[in-house]
Amino acid sequence: MLTSALNKRLPLIQEADLNGKIVLLRADHNVVKKGVIQDPFRIEQTIGTLYYIIDRGGRPIIMSHVGRPKDKKTGRITCSPDESVQPVVEYLERKLNVQFHIPDCEIDPELGISNLGKSIYRAIGDLKNRKIGGIYLPNTRWFRGEEGEGFFRDNLAVLLADLADIYVNDAFGAWQPHVSTYDVARFIPSYAGFLMQQEIANLDKVIHLEPPFLAVIAGSKYDTKIGPLTAIYDKADHLILGGILYNAYLCAKYDISIQGIDNSDIKAAGDLVAKDRQHGKILEMPYIVESEILGVKSEGTYRTVAVSDFQKGDKYGYVLDIDPRSFEDPKVTEAIMKAKTVFVNAVMGLTPHFADGSRALYEELSKNTMSRKKFGGGDTLQEFKNLCPGLYLSVLDDPSYYFFTGGGTVLKAIEQGSPYGLKPVIALMESKERLGGQ
Image (cartoon, rainbow, N blue to C red; front, side):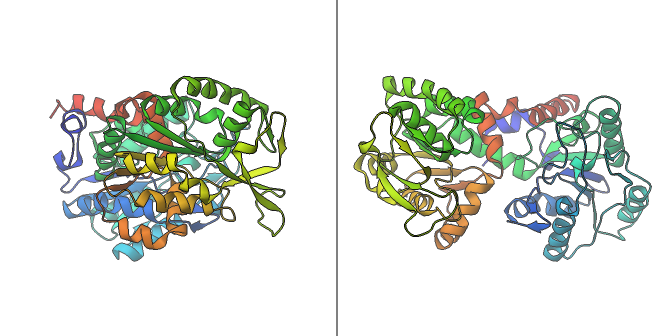
């Protein structure tokens, strides 16, 4: 159910007249790696919006980014088949039994695509005459203006807006203000798709939560998580850390060294250690898994280490997982079972070989049937499905579980204290004002 704030602040797709209109739909179908769909979850989550557009007489033009084809240092855009939308189009055609057309665009080997080309306009004619079911534009990040500035950015925004009568943003996971998520909404009537609405409504339940609140956060780099981690710490009653975040925390607190942990991360974690001395919210995982080899689990090369055995100046190899016994600790189990709201943006170990900690976490959380459990991030969702397939299938229709399509977006919104400060959402709200606040 949508919150009143969502209804008041955002223009919703169900308010738009779609009949006979060309609808430019921005989705987040960033699920392709090396030319193969890793997990179709994000595609599936946007099908409701796509069905609605077609059912209401709309003619869809879909666009999404895939990967990171732009080299930030050189500015070069590499349009590799490995980051093509072709696998997504083939998936949608099988799923919907609808033909989609990918326009041919001239590609510069250094600068990507500078304009749309003529084929898109012929395809729009076919779309209007129902000769094809939809159009799917090439990877938006192949376009020179998508992440750029100046003429090419402004030009792309105008070109995209000129293709359609209506713009719909259903790409919650794409929070950066790029042309396809932000600029285009300034030129034509713009609305939030059903997935965008659903994600914001559930995000509101994390920001305005029911305590006690348990957060489980992990990450591969501490300094990129400082902002959202601080915001989550302030909200949480208890916090469980994993991955590099936990390793940096342990180094800072116990004055030990763990292989692969940068001094910059340890220094940044020192502030969290100092803060937790006052508030005591962090639940330490008492048993960690140390390995001599990074990413390989060979007999005799890894062992379980008790945090209680740490001595100042100790040096350890790679810490790659949380031992499942940690989730049997009374303090940990009590915090999990008493939580009313749980937010998980974490893979506890270096998967696929070090996955026991993640499996134990997901299974332990499932025992608390009274809590609202929100999972954020593609890696978190994929590991949940891989490690606990039976549990995953059993909770798909469980209203106490929700799986966000964009973990980074969730963290950014939590850091800001509201989803309404995200630039693509701001663009939609401004469109509502132009539409007369309907």
